[in-house]
Image (tube, rainbow over all chains, first blue to last red; front, side, top):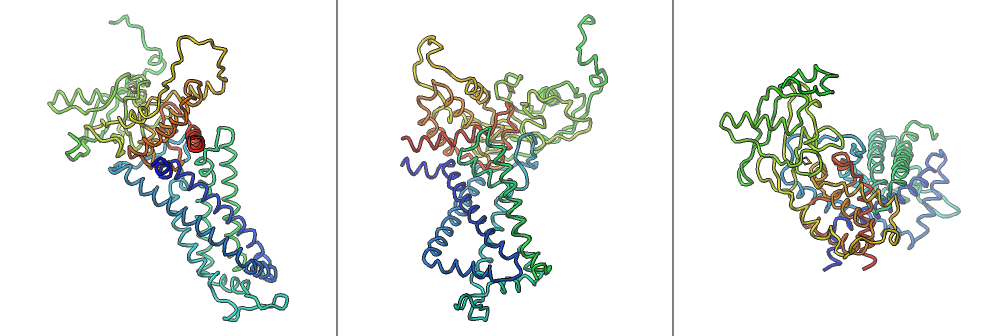
Length: 231
Length: 267
Ligand code: FES
């Protein structure tokens, strides 16, 4: 009874939201680090990296399942909390709620976390289908790595980012990633209760820097490839 | 009374005192929780910039009374920003545009002649509407009853050096204790959350020796009650701390979450 109450409490739900969110941030950081190899025009390094990941076998599956679990948790908690919001104000205001400024952290990122989050969710599903389950060796995207036939993911990525639609879409979504992280990173620490007058400001600044770095890091990849800088 | 000493501020700015304003008010009128409410439009003449917002509503009510209409119901008591009774959503801002100010301490000089002011009650499912601008905020009282007290007997005057409170903690506790329980945090929160209120009380008591004794039980009980009352969740937007007439910081919300975590781990 007590355990049930604790788990469903608004404070505990925020712990879950924060922990899963930070887990996802960790993944996004490693993902970008790997993808930095795409800034090289010659695809061997990137293909080697991709092949190396596949070579992890069971370990990779475990990591993927873990990641999927974390992502699902993040989405489910977000949904429950959003539904709670509706119930908490059944009759709304006629005038639009206007921020009073001051120390409020009310801005486009903090107010529209659900919107940026939904866009990211849809994007992630499509992105995984697009690249992870996209054409491989059987479709002719093959390359020889130390005598083994491996998937030429680099060529596929470069080809896909010759299409203006994909370039625009990928770059556009990354802006939302930045918005989501700008509030989300700091918010996670606030939800876990680690913030104090001393740390709150530096953590917020770190979140903004991380949001900027990650979103521009990803955003520039399709642009870089499209405008031929990699050739 | 010609020998009344002149108000010094009026002397420095006689134009302000002289220039009365005419305002267009849109006020939420609702006879009872069951009946549907709607906005009523009033043009109010003769509003002095030196009136408080509630005095302006008094002026409106005087006029309504003379014309035989029912006055607009609103809450107020101390009218000096310490009781937490007043509560108006003014143009989409809890307690109006000024930071760190309750409606009763908001002066009409913040508005201009000819302004339109939309006045609504606090909106939250946990704050059922009673009439016009009056809502029932007893949900906050129930959160307090759930754990916002100390039940240890501290006896008569204790020897002060036997239990030291650091200056830092004393100040933090005092800042949190400034909460007057008006509910502006709930009203301004896009999620209708009462986190700032609950957190202020938990922080205040957890920092002092009398409150430490029950701190785990308290944070668990108060958070549980807060959820049961149907308040929303907190997304750390921090609009509550800007709406708070007592400038209570959302650092207290981080403290509440730490206290709650301790409550889970230690019991
Ligand atoms: S009437 Fe007491 S705080 Fe405004």
